[in-house]
Image (cartoon, rainbow, N blue to C red; front, side):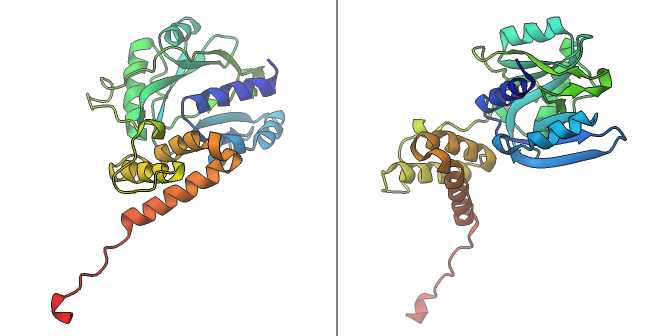
Length: 264
């Protein structure tokens, strides 16, 4: 694959495992960092990253912070161990140098907040021999399709992207907590809070129900985009954002003042 195809393969796999926003960063030759935070995968400034990479900046990516994502990162994993992981679980293996160390992104059975991702990474790293210093929960990995100037300018490539294997269950790694996930809207029945049985009415009820249950709004947003896209096409993102915003305003709106019956 060409460089652009390598980048597309990595980002497409992230999207398939429900990661839709990312932070993109470059480390320039003088050591300074430049960032683009909380960008949708389709809106990442890849041309900017490419220009920086030509000037010997290294290009990094991570799922956007301040959100729950079903993905954990492992650094400096030997090729044999990385491929073994990908044969057992859904995983993305990125080869970052000819010497053999890989980045591995493991799909989880449930979204994890940053602290939980840190716990999961530490738990996995100690068992498979990954770099134990790269377990912050928000660690950056290299973006495929760009040169690794730390290793003489070799290309960073997707070695393997496994989809058919099951997601890894992080329950044991995060202290035995019950995995949390949000079912897709299509699997929900129309809630009793609304009599609108149109697709948008059902989705509105589902969104309100998920937020009331304490599900991360970012996860609700990405599920709604996924569900609405076949019907709304390019408008799905705007529609989902507007729906989530309305539901959040509704949830946190102050209650109406209570009227004293003696005033009637």
